[in-house]
Amino acid sequence: MASVIFDRVAIIGLGLIGSSLGHAIKRGGLAHHIAGYARTEETRKAALEIGFVDSVHDTAAQAVQGADLTLVCVPVGISGAVTKELAAALKPGSIISDAGSVKQSVIADMVPHVPEGVHFIPGHPIAGTEHSGPHSGFATLFDGRWCILTPLAGTDSGALQKLTAFWQGCGSMVDQMTPAHHDQVLAITSHLPQLIAYNIVGTVTELEEDTQSEVTKFSASGFRDFTRLAASDPVMWRDICIANRDAILEMLGRFTEDLTALQRSIRRGDADKLHQLFTRTRDMRARIVEAGQDTPEVDFGRHASDQPGSED
Ligand code: NAP
Figure (tube, rainbow, N blue to C red):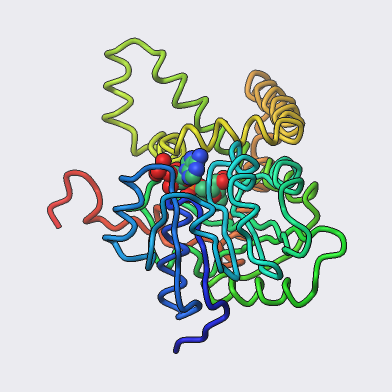
């Protein structure tokens, strides 16, 4: 059943997150009109053809005119520049938010441009895939996933309530954190795993060619799960590494120390230590499944028919 929260929503950046938001808003009937803007004509045209926006505009400033909610969904490194472009056209009393994977640097970049009387409430949906662009989005991306809002001091409670209801309408569960805490938590839950994936896949690309073809052939033994993450958008992850440098370096430091300890346990044949660690990690997996953040199905729910060579 349609439940309109905002009359007009503007989505700036029409890639995976922007297009998924458009689809989710339409599914929930959360707005009367969705205006869109992306950098290239090609993306704007695709967005209109697919139909997750009702109109596209030649500039970001045109897209946000009259919008009650503006969602900035561009790579974090350009959030500030994009906000500067559209700031003067923001409707007084409206809300501007973002989807950036890092919060402190994005807030520092956007805040100086947000005019008095416009409510800036930073956000980050903890949902995604390794795909990007306007064709990659889908309405259910946010279903059952957390969206973290990091409201600034003095945030209007009515605006915060409306944005919370909006994300819930998109299927999300909503939580609040300080920007600094968000960046620390995401450094370990998202940024570090991504870097480990980039690193292990990078190591393979440096191996001799005949070894590489063996890796491809036998990738189902674990390697392919890293390649899914390592196929993510390079611009997005380049920006995240730079924007969340301090928290990422802190987590990489801890990871490196733990890896060295693991290396020592293996070298010394310390079966007890290895067994203890692998038991603790198994419990972590059970907790994630229990929290509804993954499926307990074998092989992450991949079906036999999805497997290469399957006769199904
Ligand atoms: P994406 O699929 O690569 O899309 C990025 C969009 O931004 C494209 O439509 C692109 O337009 C547009 N853009 C780039 N530069 C622009 C500019 N200067 N002016 C206006 N538009 C510009 O990226 P995404 O995955 O949706 O990520 C968007 C944001 O969400 C990022 O901040 C990311 O950190 C965050 N996020 C991503 C995920 C994820 O898993 N992907 C999850 C949560 C949050 P063109 O197509 O015309 O180039």
